[in-house]
Length: 265
Image 1: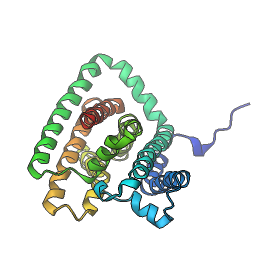
Image 2 (image 1 turned 180 degrees about the vertical axis):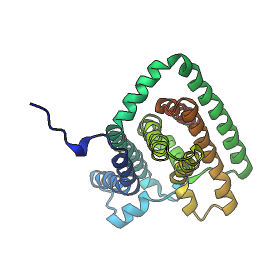
Image 3 (image 1 turned 30 degrees about the vertical axis):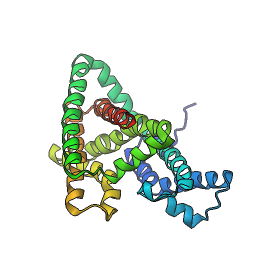
Image 4 (image 1 turned 90 degrees about the vertical axis):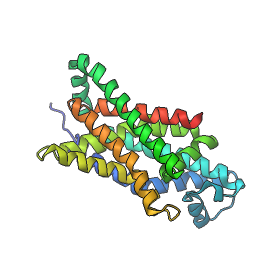
Protein backbone atom coordinates (compact mmCIF):
# COMPACT_ATOMS: atom_id res chain seq x y z
CA UNK A 1 0.00 0.00 0.00
CA UNK A 2 1.44 3.36 -1.05
CA UNK A 3 1.96 6.03 1.58
CA UNK A 4 -0.28 9.06 1.13
CA UNK A 5 1.77 12.24 1.25
CA UNK A 6 0.39 15.43 2.74
CA UNK A 7 0.86 18.17 0.10
CA UNK A 8 0.96 20.84 2.82
CA UNK A 9 4.12 19.29 4.25
CA UNK A 10 5.98 18.97 0.96
CA UNK A 11 9.02 21.23 0.35
CA UNK A 12 7.80 24.67 -0.64
CA UNK A 13 9.97 27.79 -0.63
CA UNK A 14 6.93 30.09 -0.72
CA UNK A 15 5.59 28.61 2.52
CA UNK A 16 9.08 29.01 4.02
CA UNK A 17 9.25 32.67 3.01
CA UNK A 18 5.73 33.43 4.27
CA UNK A 19 6.45 31.63 7.56
CA UNK A 20 9.62 33.66 8.01
CA UNK A 21 7.84 36.95 7.27
CA UNK A 22 4.99 36.19 9.67
CA UNK A 23 7.38 35.22 12.45
CA UNK A 24 9.60 38.23 11.84
CA UNK A 25 6.86 40.86 11.55
CA UNK A 26 4.22 39.56 13.91
CA UNK A 27 5.34 36.48 15.81
CA UNK A 28 8.39 38.22 17.24
CA UNK A 29 6.35 40.89 19.03
CA UNK A 30 3.99 38.34 20.58
CA UNK A 31 6.86 36.08 21.65
CA UNK A 32 8.77 38.94 23.29
CA UNK A 33 5.63 40.11 25.03
CA UNK A 34 4.87 36.57 26.16
CA UNK A 35 8.25 36.15 27.85
CA UNK A 36 7.88 39.63 29.31
CA UNK A 37 4.53 38.67 30.85
CA UNK A 38 6.05 35.52 32.35
CA UNK A 39 8.92 37.47 33.88
CA UNK A 40 6.50 40.18 35.01
CA UNK A 41 4.34 37.57 36.77
CA UNK A 42 7.16 35.57 38.37
CA UNK A 43 9.00 38.62 39.71
CA UNK A 44 5.84 40.55 40.65
CA UNK A 45 7.00 43.54 38.62
CA UNK A 46 3.37 44.60 38.19
CA UNK A 47 3.62 46.36 34.85
CA UNK A 48 0.39 46.47 32.89
CA UNK A 49 0.32 45.20 29.31
CA UNK A 50 0.72 48.65 27.75
CA UNK A 51 3.65 49.54 30.01
CA UNK A 52 5.30 46.19 29.33
CA UNK A 53 4.88 46.56 25.58
CA UNK A 54 6.36 50.06 25.66
CA UNK A 55 9.29 48.88 27.77
CA UNK A 56 10.17 45.98 25.50
CA UNK A 57 10.03 48.16 22.37
CA UNK A 58 12.45 50.75 23.78
CA UNK A 59 15.56 51.07 21.63
CA UNK A 60 17.62 53.23 24.00
CA UNK A 61 18.76 51.04 26.90
CA UNK A 62 19.93 54.06 28.91
CA UNK A 63 16.32 55.26 29.16
CA UNK A 64 15.19 52.06 30.89
CA UNK A 65 15.01 52.26 34.68
CA UNK A 66 17.52 49.95 36.37
CA UNK A 67 14.79 47.95 38.09
CA UNK A 68 13.35 46.96 34.68
CA UNK A 69 16.59 46.19 32.85
CA UNK A 70 16.68 42.49 33.74
CA UNK A 71 13.13 42.12 32.47
CA UNK A 72 14.08 43.86 29.22
CA UNK A 73 17.20 41.74 28.64
CA UNK A 74 15.52 38.47 29.63
CA UNK A 75 12.50 39.00 27.38
CA UNK A 76 14.37 40.32 24.36
CA UNK A 77 17.26 37.85 24.42
CA UNK A 78 15.12 34.72 24.88
CA UNK A 79 12.48 36.18 22.58
CA UNK A 80 15.04 36.70 19.80
CA UNK A 81 16.32 33.16 20.34
CA UNK A 82 12.80 31.72 20.05
CA UNK A 83 12.00 33.75 16.93
CA UNK A 84 15.09 32.46 15.13
CA UNK A 85 14.66 28.92 16.44
CA UNK A 86 11.08 28.78 15.15
CA UNK A 87 12.15 30.44 11.90
CA UNK A 88 14.87 27.83 11.49
CA UNK A 89 12.41 24.98 12.06
CA UNK A 90 9.90 26.36 9.54
CA UNK A 91 12.37 27.50 6.87
CA UNK A 92 14.67 24.46 7.06
CA UNK A 93 11.71 22.07 6.95
CA UNK A 94 10.06 23.62 3.89
CA UNK A 95 13.39 24.16 2.11
CA UNK A 96 14.92 20.82 3.09
CA UNK A 97 15.15 19.80 -0.57
CA UNK A 98 17.66 22.60 -1.20
CA UNK A 99 19.64 21.68 1.90
CA UNK A 100 19.88 18.08 0.67
CA UNK A 101 20.79 19.03 -2.91
CA UNK A 102 23.46 21.50 -1.85
CA UNK A 103 24.91 19.02 0.65
CA UNK A 104 25.41 16.59 -2.23
CA UNK A 105 26.99 19.37 -4.28
CA UNK A 106 29.29 20.22 -1.41
CA UNK A 107 30.52 16.63 -1.28
CA UNK A 108 30.97 16.37 -5.05
CA UNK A 109 32.90 19.65 -5.36
CA UNK A 110 34.67 19.55 -2.00
CA UNK A 111 38.16 20.01 -3.51
CA UNK A 112 37.20 23.35 -5.04
CA UNK A 113 34.79 24.54 -2.36
CA UNK A 114 37.20 23.63 0.45
CA UNK A 115 39.39 26.61 -0.47
CA UNK A 116 36.90 28.84 -2.31
CA UNK A 117 34.39 29.13 0.56
CA UNK A 118 36.98 30.18 3.21
CA UNK A 119 38.61 32.55 0.69
CA UNK A 120 35.31 34.29 -0.08
CA UNK A 121 34.41 34.42 3.60
CA UNK A 122 37.78 35.84 4.60
CA UNK A 123 37.97 38.50 1.89
CA UNK A 124 34.31 39.45 2.27
CA UNK A 125 34.48 39.76 6.03
CA UNK A 126 37.74 41.72 5.86
CA UNK A 127 36.31 44.31 3.48
CA UNK A 128 33.01 44.58 5.37
CA UNK A 129 34.80 44.95 8.70
CA UNK A 130 37.07 47.73 7.41
CA UNK A 131 34.13 49.64 5.94
CA UNK A 132 32.05 49.15 9.09
CA UNK A 133 34.97 50.26 11.27
CA UNK A 134 35.59 53.31 9.12
CA UNK A 135 31.95 54.41 9.14
CA UNK A 136 31.68 53.81 12.89
CA UNK A 137 34.69 56.01 13.56
CA UNK A 138 33.47 58.68 11.14
CA UNK A 139 29.99 59.16 12.64
CA UNK A 140 30.45 57.47 16.06
CA UNK A 141 27.21 55.57 15.58
CA UNK A 142 26.11 52.01 14.99
CA UNK A 143 22.76 50.90 13.61
CA UNK A 144 19.88 50.47 16.04
CA UNK A 145 19.87 46.76 15.20
CA UNK A 146 23.56 46.39 16.08
CA UNK A 147 23.17 48.52 19.19
CA UNK A 148 20.31 46.39 20.55
CA UNK A 149 22.27 43.18 19.94
CA UNK A 150 25.30 44.58 21.77
CA UNK A 151 23.15 45.68 24.72
CA UNK A 152 21.63 42.22 25.13
CA UNK A 153 24.98 40.44 24.84
CA UNK A 154 26.70 42.72 27.36
CA UNK A 155 23.90 42.68 29.92
CA UNK A 156 23.29 39.00 30.53
CA UNK A 157 21.67 37.74 27.34
CA UNK A 158 24.87 36.52 25.70
CA UNK A 159 24.09 32.79 25.64
CA UNK A 160 20.65 33.25 24.10
CA UNK A 161 21.94 35.81 21.59
CA UNK A 162 24.80 33.51 20.60
CA UNK A 163 22.35 30.84 19.50
CA UNK A 164 20.10 33.43 17.87
CA UNK A 165 22.63 35.43 15.83
CA UNK A 166 25.46 32.91 15.33
CA UNK A 167 23.74 29.53 15.05
CA UNK A 168 20.23 30.08 13.65
CA UNK A 169 20.16 33.51 11.97
CA UNK A 170 22.84 32.78 9.31
CA UNK A 171 21.23 29.64 7.89
CA UNK A 172 17.70 31.08 8.03
CA UNK A 173 18.68 34.33 6.34
CA UNK A 174 20.75 32.60 3.67
CA UNK A 175 17.90 30.26 2.77
CA UNK A 176 15.53 33.23 2.48
CA UNK A 177 17.69 36.05 1.10
CA UNK A 178 19.93 34.01 -1.15
CA UNK A 179 18.46 30.62 -2.00
CA UNK A 180 14.77 31.57 -2.24
CA UNK A 181 15.35 34.88 -4.03
CA UNK A 182 17.84 33.47 -6.53
CA UNK A 183 15.46 30.58 -7.21
CA UNK A 184 12.48 32.90 -7.74
CA UNK A 185 14.47 35.05 -10.17
CA UNK A 186 16.55 32.36 -11.90
CA UNK A 187 14.88 33.04 -15.27
CA UNK A 188 15.95 36.68 -15.15
CA UNK A 189 19.45 38.20 -15.52
CA UNK A 190 21.58 37.36 -12.46
CA UNK A 191 22.05 41.07 -11.73
CA UNK A 192 18.39 41.31 -10.71
CA UNK A 193 18.85 38.52 -8.15
CA UNK A 194 21.80 40.44 -6.72
CA UNK A 195 19.89 43.72 -6.42
CA UNK A 196 16.75 42.20 -4.91
CA UNK A 197 18.72 39.98 -2.53
CA UNK A 198 20.93 42.82 -1.30
CA UNK A 199 18.05 45.25 -0.77
CA UNK A 200 15.80 42.73 0.98
CA UNK A 201 18.70 41.64 3.18
CA UNK A 202 19.51 45.23 4.16
CA UNK A 203 15.99 46.48 4.91
CA UNK A 204 15.12 44.26 7.93
CA UNK A 205 18.51 45.03 9.50
CA UNK A 206 17.96 48.77 9.06
CA UNK A 207 14.24 49.18 9.71
CA UNK A 208 14.64 50.22 13.37
CA UNK A 209 17.38 52.68 12.37
CA UNK A 210 15.13 54.21 9.69
CA UNK A 211 12.38 54.68 12.29
CA UNK A 212 14.68 56.28 14.87
CA UNK A 213 14.60 60.08 14.91
CA UNK A 214 17.95 60.22 16.71
CA UNK A 215 19.75 59.41 13.43
CA UNK A 216 20.20 62.02 10.71
CA UNK A 217 19.42 61.19 7.09
CA UNK A 218 23.12 61.06 6.24
CA UNK A 219 23.82 58.74 9.20
CA UNK A 220 21.05 56.39 8.11
CA UNK A 221 22.49 56.30 4.60
CA UNK A 222 26.03 55.63 5.82
CA UNK A 223 24.88 52.90 8.22
CA UNK A 224 23.19 51.13 5.29
CA UNK A 225 26.53 50.69 3.52
CA UNK A 226 27.95 47.84 5.69
CA UNK A 227 24.73 45.83 5.27
CA UNK A 228 24.61 46.52 1.52
CA UNK A 229 28.25 45.47 1.23
CA UNK A 230 27.70 42.33 3.32
CA UNK A 231 24.71 41.45 1.15
CA UNK A 232 26.83 41.89 -1.96
CA UNK A 233 29.65 39.75 -0.55
CA UNK A 234 27.21 37.01 0.41
CA UNK A 235 25.67 37.07 -3.08
CA UNK A 236 29.10 36.84 -4.71
CA UNK A 237 30.08 33.95 -2.43
CA UNK A 238 26.83 32.14 -3.14
CA UNK A 239 27.15 32.73 -6.89
CA UNK A 240 30.83 31.81 -7.23
CA UNK A 241 30.34 28.63 -5.20
CA UNK A 242 27.79 27.23 -7.67
CA UNK A 243 24.85 28.68 -5.71
CA UNK A 244 25.56 26.38 -2.80
CA UNK A 245 23.78 27.59 0.33
CA UNK A 246 26.47 26.15 2.60
CA UNK A 247 29.00 28.56 1.11
CA UNK A 248 27.15 31.77 1.97
CA UNK A 249 25.96 30.21 5.24
CA UNK A 250 29.58 29.57 6.30
CA UNK A 251 30.52 33.16 5.40
CA UNK A 252 27.52 34.51 7.31
CA UNK A 253 28.22 32.34 10.35
CA UNK A 254 31.91 33.35 10.49
CA UNK A 255 30.95 37.01 10.13
CA UNK A 256 28.44 36.85 12.98
CA UNK A 257 30.73 34.73 15.16
CA UNK A 258 33.65 37.17 14.89
CA UNK A 259 31.31 40.12 15.48
CA UNK A 260 29.89 38.34 18.55
CA UNK A 261 33.38 37.71 19.95
CA UNK A 262 34.39 41.34 19.39
CA UNK A 263 31.30 42.54 21.28
CA UNK A 264 32.14 40.22 24.19
CA UNK A 265 35.76 41.43 24.43
